[in-house]
Length: 188
Image 1: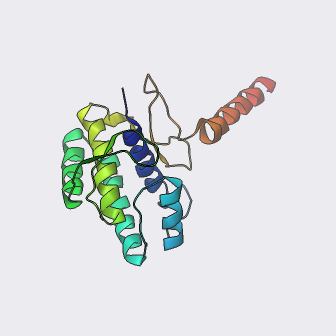
Image 2: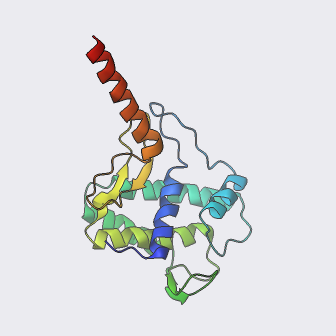
């Protein structure tokens, strides 16, 4: 599956946004998008262009958008995901335009010039998720299978076999635990 640079950046941003949400009582992990400073850090970490001054209105809108993206991830089928994405993208007032800023070659921005951060994310990230639905690849949108972790990720592995948000943390922790359990069992 070929994913363009800007689509990959938008997918990374939506994953990053989803992973700022609290993971629930069983999984632990607080909400990390609690103030405008955290929102500014999020936009910087994901190189989101054209971000002006952010305030509490932007924070509330982005947090509401995060919940809408979570619904797309949890959609039971492509038809429901498409309906959610269509509504989300339409609400952003998409205005596709070619651009080549910040040293990147030509790519498409889907948000209108001067759009709010929430509309910017809804348009660009919504379109990136829509591309996965169109390509028949929505099953690549996953949640980590490690106990205590519900982080979102996009499985871009060739054989679609990734199970953990990170092989270095969640995957490694489970592999080490399984190894130790086998060692205990063998020792008797």
